[in-house]
Image (tube, rainbow, N blue to C red; front, side, top):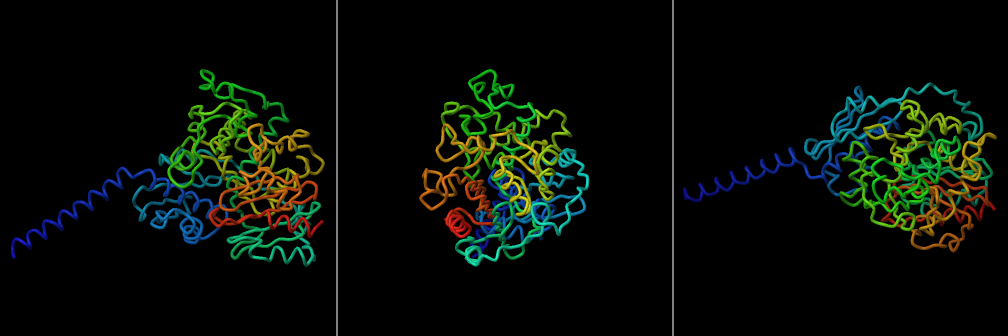
Length: 460
């Protein structure tokens, strides 16, 4: 009997030792998947708390854990509102990551933990002379909604609007004619556009092209590229996602895109270091790394760091009246032009109307004449993507050229698209912009094309 007791004690001791060893390993050298998960949790909670004013526990449960990797359900977050810090980790302690809020620039992931240095990147935002709220959109925020019963029926249809819809705005002939918001969200809630940000970033490039500080045919874009085949990559190649650079855009695990967003303090540097794997200008490869490198290029073109950090607001957001817009940077101060723009649905719609008007706002030509038309021309290496960070086909039709027209959409329809169901359809021939924001994972198969086609018919 004593031998059995002794063996049981030895076995329990071994189990305890194994558990302690596992805990120590996860604490001292956490696997990258855990660090990506904690980095994602900290960043999303930080931005939604300090930009959108949302409850951190709700954001963690609804935005992070519900639609994501099962590992995320074990993440716990801690919010320090006074210091503008959010930390997250497995069970709150393992593989910890931190995100920090900065003046005027939202939140940044801080993979190396140097929050002091990350705080040095900030921009002083002067209070804007906000147009009277009772003025009609786009000059103000007041909306005289359409009394068209067909339009109301369409946007009130849960299947049309899609599971997880948070904001839906319909603009016809320069006026908002209908809008709807999900529970807990309003016209004043800044919402993340994910990869819709890429199109806004492309427009920022356009402001520098107009000013003569950037040229679409320029090459030798980064110093290390001059020594190899990457020297042949042009700015236009990068805008069209045909640089030929290696970049894995798979969000399901630790891939280039998740590594860049949550493990790398210098995102542009990470993208810049990728090797060529395809023929420059001939191989289409959708890449968030490319978009962040575009940010680095246009910031360098502006020159002065402080001026560059203020450029999105002074060159684009302020002229368009996008007062809620916050474009975030990485730890090093490079704008994450691939992913991180927060704005109200009204402000996203302003940007869509701006594209519809060919880059003109209140009579001012903010983008070069013809630039928006160029943006939506088919990229040489793709039949579904445009030359300037826009989609010619809607969500789910990326491998099916012409599917939009087959669904009943006008042939000139083009799209901004983002992760988890963020879309904007621009239909020049119908003077129509439809913004749809939400939390709708791709696995649900939601296609906004059906709703947009119905709206085109109802408003024709």
